[in-house]
Length: 139
Image (cartoon, rainbow, N blue to C red; front, side, top):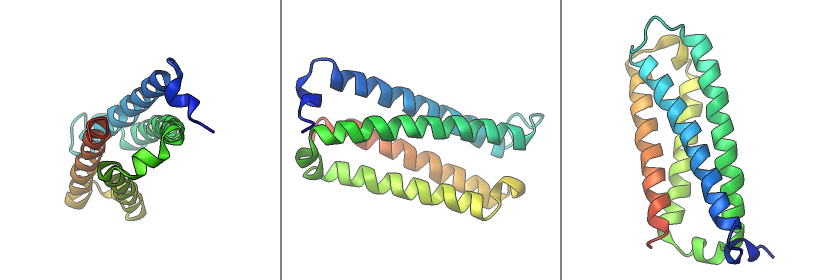
């Protein structure tokens, strides 16, 4: 049904562009916010910066999700057979759980050692997701 996505000369590349724009919004805003958790830009109020960064990160994640689902729909059998794709999805789940943990424990108000550790885990997971995403093309 969605095979046209991979056969159309414009569809898949356009989805990849949207995916990359989403990655930029997500990661760029996470880095900005996570640097603030580490004390960089301490003159910036945490609350307003966090609200802005979270909104833009969620917009990026929505772009990633929508474009990713359409790319997946174009070749589900191939992707489900690729262990690196399954690893990528597992890492996305872990990144989401880490974000939930960050907010559930009130890390935004604490900005303590655990909050900083959570930001390191977050960035490591998202970088691993990006690496796996690129690796899918070569697996």
